[in-house]
Image (cartoon, rainbow, N blue to C red; front, side, top):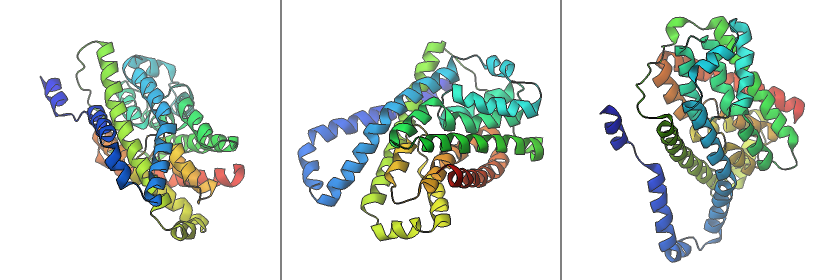
Length: 322
């Protein structure tokens, strides 16, 4: 009964997107007149380019993350991790390389790990690493930055370093009363039904955030005076902090954020690396999900610490590799 009520209340993002596409096709003549100016056409060009490049990776990432969240038994993770917390942290971090998942899927998976008795430090490490260093994200980064393989390496190194540092930091300084054990909601229906429900929900959310991110990037490139962006970009510290903060506000899916970062060509590679490291680990939707899963006391401490560690890791890695 509760599931059916929740389903009725849930906004069907894919249906809304389909209706919008139909309207766009029918009203293409009127839309063409609206976007007749050169600046408007440039905005559309940037927006469409980002969406078209990123969408295949969003779809692939959604399919894989839904499979991990719904088809892989929870006991698999508990058995695969070492019992010693200090060793479980790096194993959980490296597991992000083999287990693709977006940041939306990593939060419930981390909650399931904690429920199964996995040390919270390892679960939190996986929460940060999985959406940041999985193969889909790294492949998308390589496509978004052609001819710059070190950008992929730098993202891998900085993101993994941030994940491990936060895991060990929680192991050292974290307190049990800060972390609320997640409550497990009852699951009904077959695994196939759960899988397709997860795909539908994740795809709707990812497509929505991708559109928001692409629109914001297009506005930055077209509407914001170039001298403003250049002024910020010319100050290395300000540029890094600005793009890291922008990643928090935009809340873009990790499978698509590389294409938005690549479009911000006014900024240095290190600043864009900070955007790529911070985004999958700290943003508005993730903060809300973490607060709902682990409690507000946890989120208010974990998110700012992750932001600071992520920015530091990006700066150090960028200065060495980029």
